[in-house]
Length: 246
Length: 246
DNA sequence: CGTTTGCTTGACAGCATTCAACGTTGGTGG
DNA sequence: CCACCAACGTTGAATGCTGTCAAGCAAACG
Picture 1 (spheres, rainbow over the protein chains, first blue to last red):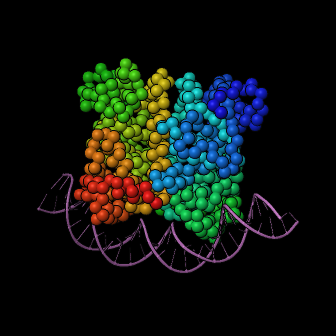
Picture 2 (cartoon, rainbow over the protein chains, first blue to last red):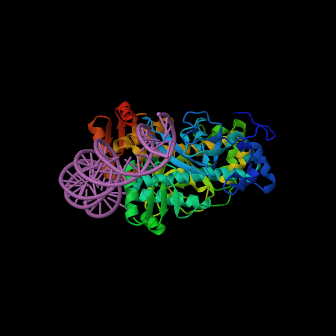
């Protein structure tokens, strides 16, 4: 698990069929920060791309931290824990997004990362990433931007949790998902939710019943069409108006 | 403001009377990550230590990002903004803590940093910090840990906001302040609040009246003694029990 | 000393939670 | 293939916590 299997390894798994230099996510991920001719350097750092089954943990709170992970395919939730043991979804991660940044400080993961569908991640050992970052200035800056973005995203969630009604929280949540999905080339009006109502509620500081009620309400208003986990945004402008007006 | 005034400048201000290599915060700040004999390298990076008056902004949302800031003396609040213009306190920063990390991604500050008392900060230009980080591996890691800690801290706030009652939020807030103050050698049972009830409420997702009521309630229970902004923690264990029990 | 700002307390209203019942979906095994 | 079960989702009614509005008081500032 810890061994740096060279790419010439004879072990043929899906994990070896991709490389950063040819990854379809390279515009969203670390490759954007490296010149074309140096991309293969990343391939020597990212040699391990495990598959995680739906419901399984990529890591759990307390696990030793060694690497950060980039979602290649699939969908994850990040669960934080209160001192009383209560857990809460701290974020959802999709292709190109990074998991495990919270483990750097203490060398121990501070939360669980659970796959919400069968997924694949790229393992990026922090030591080697840092080594590469020392050599390639744009990569160094890119990594810092990734962490900065995580901080800003958390601030957005704090705003949600601190001062928005249930309607607004759900609206903002959907718009955020929509925007990230669009960035990845998905439909701009249809969302297939990967998580339960309980997960959404946990993330938004609401109970699952409240989430369900808001969905129903927005559907009654003709803003959404809700079919189980399939959400069609009928009037995105109305959703945005919900969030942007006080 | 942007010029890198060399230390030989004849301008004598309080800003020039300190150096990282002799700073009393060196155990809390970047110096911990540098060998004694290389500490003066930091002094060439951190040459500017402006004073910020109470109520003034160190930076505001939208300002161009150039540097991060370490609080040398004083106390700051970090205000984030919702799309509807509503603002919310996203954190409080005291000596040795870092401001401005959220500006790295977009080269623009994403929130306001307001001094809650007359303060002094050390200006750490990001470019030069990164340059030094490429040279000194422990410094590089230390910077990453600082950002990681910020992410974990935000997760803690999300837990507060998402699933705790007003009592618990206030208790957790006081304990967190207490812990950080202790780390800096202050009393372990007395807190002088630098912020208004409204600031606290904004941070905790409560109205100022609710904060006030919780203070009164905890005082009635003999857990706190509240005299204006002076809080004495009479029974810290009871406070902790409040947070740690479901 | 007066004005502004911050803090406390009370009464009431409102939104989200809680508790409960029922409906739906998807996976499993007969 | 169908039946069953467990997990997930929806909806209703009642409770309760926090917000809102208002008044009065204390402290800080000039």
